[in-house]
Length: 295
Image (cartoon, rainbow, N blue to C red; front, top):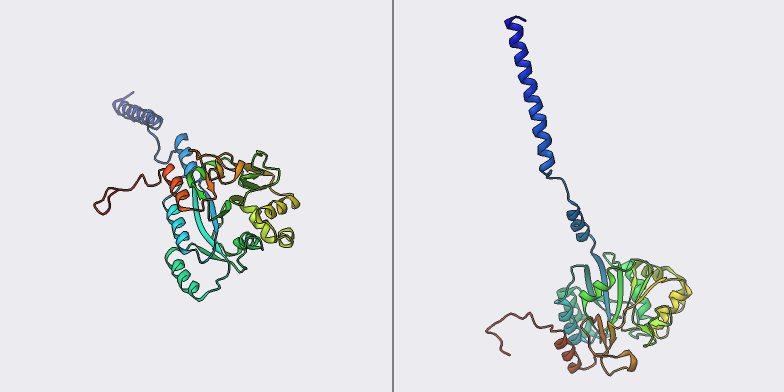
């Protein structure tokens, strides 16, 4: 091998060594350093968790003239939220019948946008609940996983409600406080009108099916159960006892003392009852210190 050939050979050998070293370095680098586009299993769980929020619409069936009570409930629900669900609360009543209602409720609509006015006569057992459910697929700007009908004398704790719904099916669901009071079987009788939930597919069924249309009149909570039974619907049923109940001492076996895991307390007819419930759950604990008020 002459000098020229030897020089070319050494250059090639050095180039090959550099190439091999580069490959080894690159392999070591990709083993020990994550790609900026790589997602760890725990991150995947976080991403799935962030997209797993579900939607709940709570329709509080009330009357147009109850301005003060409506605003009181608006405050109670306005200070609550849940990381598990997007929860909207709307106040639902029938056609306005007084000139002042058109002015005052128009102000509420402009300020809060939480009013639903149905084309019906204000009577709970004369088709209002049917009108509520059947109108939603047509009038709502978005879909929800669950729709709740609630009375205006019930206090609903939104975070416990969301936690109780999170593991349940998203379809063919009927949820609430089953009657009779001492029953734990959600397939017997019906869910109390204090507050019951239907999955969105059942709301759509109510809007389209003939059965609810033909059986609109009577005790509204019983009628809803009758619709579902006649239509062979709501195979997934859940009664949330003892977390849902009537205020202590107001309704026999449907009542019991306040408990920490409460989802809903019903039959709050007086301010002292509301006050006791809100004090029990320490609702005002987050009030900031201020020179503007003293307790």
